[in-house]
Length: 72
Image (tube, rainbow, N blue to C red; front, side, top):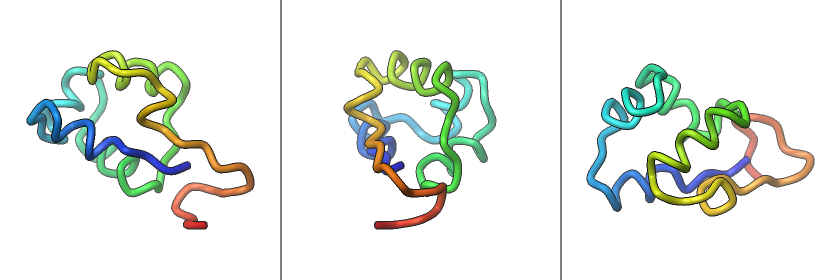
């Protein structure tokens, strides 16, 4: 899954730590999501989208047949 998380964080001038606190995870989790090494649960994806005043489909781009950390 590709993500535009870093781009959306920048829109609101949020650090990885800021966003992590807003959604109740560690900074490391945000780092892994941004790098594509971790696919968040649906609940976490929703919480992130809500915190960034967006929707899941704008931030997370699902690519069929990929695994975490794999680029197409």
